[in-house]
Amino acid sequence: MNRLFCVIPCYNEQEVLPETSKRLEAKLRELIAAGKISDDSRILFVNDGSKDNTWNIIKDLHEKNEIFQGINLSKNMGHQNALLAGLMTAKDLCDAAISLDADLQDDINAIDGMVDKFIDGCDVVYGVRSKRATDTFFKKFTAESFYKLMNSMGANTVYNHADYRLMSRRALIALAEFGEVNLFLRGIVPMVGFKSDVVYYERAERFAGESKYPLKKMLSFAIEGITSLSTKPIKIITGLGFFIFFVSIVVLIYSLVRHFTGQTIPGWTTTVLSVWAIGGLIMISLGVIGEYIGKIYLETKNRPRFIIESYVGDEEDVETSEYVYKR
Image (cartoon, rainbow, N blue to C red):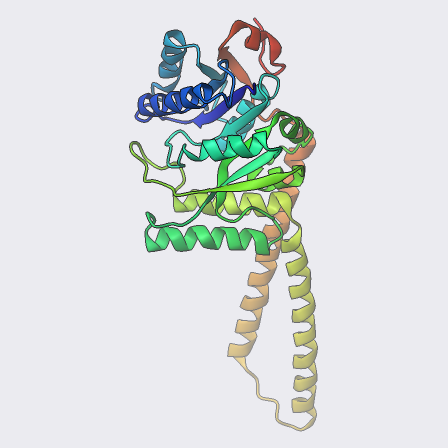
């Protein structure tokens, strides 16, 4: 029998946790009754420095039912770090772990298909949206553009896949070998390799609370992913530099011809436009290079990606996990 952990990062999710916990418990009980997972499977919530009552709700859930476990991070570490904290804790305790968001917009019925494919030998199973019928035109356009931009820039991801996935224990152990401080799990997990497959599902609307990924944060997330996984932007800058150099040679030849044929006319407008255009490209180029230098700076510091303040769960699990500080 396989022990399954559901890992759910939480940030200010007090509105959704009662319903989320009820639905997930029912799903795990269903899989246990079907003999697909063991009866000591668990639901692991990761509190990412929430400012509301999220952690108290998690503790209450654990006190009432041992199927629920909880990790409380020392401060807000960000979604990707919180997710990694849960996965690395579960790594020592489970045969497979499924990561998903607390709002349950990702259809939990897809868990059945993920578990079936895991039993059939897959180490990684991606939850992929089959369509975006519930999205507005703007949301659909920006989301699909996000994936296309990521892949075109060399950050290879699974199209229409977020962080809803199953990973086997050996896939989690392999993931632990990646020591990046700048995390982008959607791009790192495919690098792990092993046998993988996909399960398609339809995404529902959020039933409570507010989205934690507005457009501004999505753009920041895209830049983080591209600069963490690919050097293609620097190559584009290099190519652009060669192109501008070639254009400058053409302009130089044109100017010399005009000069020696006596057709030179002083042009203030073209001079100003040239200065502004080249100056703008230089600033953009410095900004992109600065992004990479900043990431190198953070990587060399080798700071911890997460710090666990407390963990509520089975006593043997608390003693087993290497990431939990004992007091």
